[in-house]
Length: 455
Ligand code: ASP
Picture (cartoon, rainbow, N blue to C red):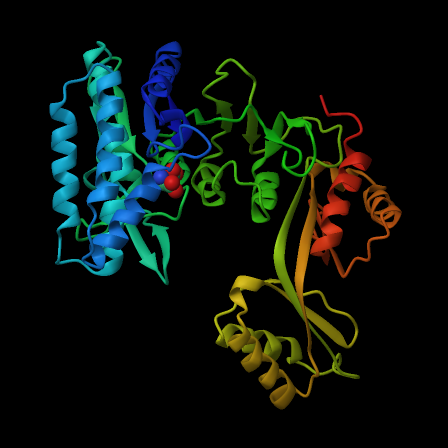
């Protein structure tokens, strides 16, 4: 069986929904659909999930929601009308939303969750009805009742291992040719309250569904033909990536590749289910396959990712190297402030702690610097506005020129690298530099490694 996850642009209106349905018809192995909320129909449009966030905010503050509700209502009715479905579906969905907006018994988090998840419910209800009306047997599976059990741990949504068995049973077709339609983005806690993943989380729901039924393939349908070797906003017409490994995807997703939600990799990784990224508007294109082990690799670098807003806290103290536990003491200070550390390159008597700027507001900086000075005797220097540029490729392991080629490409642009790190498994090389230099670095590296596109 194949699990297909359709993103918001694939479900933005009736025209897109019809494309999705013909994709499902085309291959009888496609048995489970996991759907997002309707996305943007054009550049200036608003995603349905964003409308729901606006409504939740207003309703929670006891402010008028009518104007946003009306935009939502018109959009829902238009899609239902254009699909030729009965208007009673819109009325019943709108009544449910009204009930959710008026709930007073929930915490802020639970109140928001049950509202912002509603876009996915609407997509799934509409598609189930449309399939049935068009003689394709379909069944709606609610992820909460269906067994997708989620917990919030320190603001992060965690999947309970019990989910796989129960959801696996719920997603089994009950009759020949039945298509299961499940809303993405949410599950439920032990009390049956809706809990959402982070934004873009329908990818994770799809991955859990694929793992739960031991799918042969997990297809992620969006509006791009491929994953590209570099973000198309940074280089014109970049090379497509035809195949990449889970590890490469994970490394690239770490700084900026957003095609598949990084947390979606874990469930399919464990079961070695391949992922195929495909375009709903070009369904016969090859797309990008994300696999456990790649075939022969003829190119050392698979992709180049870049992200801004990093900072480095660097410190040096003569003869700190022989002292046991210094590094642990430094890291503990960051841990006490609940700051996640991205990298910690060390020299003989020096260490830099690389973190994301969002995790290091000025008040935390003040406390951390104060403790590093007074408790450990360092004189730290904080550099902000740094960018990370990362070369990723399983092929680097068998290649001996990647570092020198990258260094020359950067030197040709007179870029001064602040930090360089290669991971032990030689799948990635990370360069930190100023944000201004990053703009020149990415095209230079791309030119060096992708003067011809890999086959
Ligand atoms: N609708 C949610 C969002 O916009 C989840 C998703 O589309 O995957 O983030």
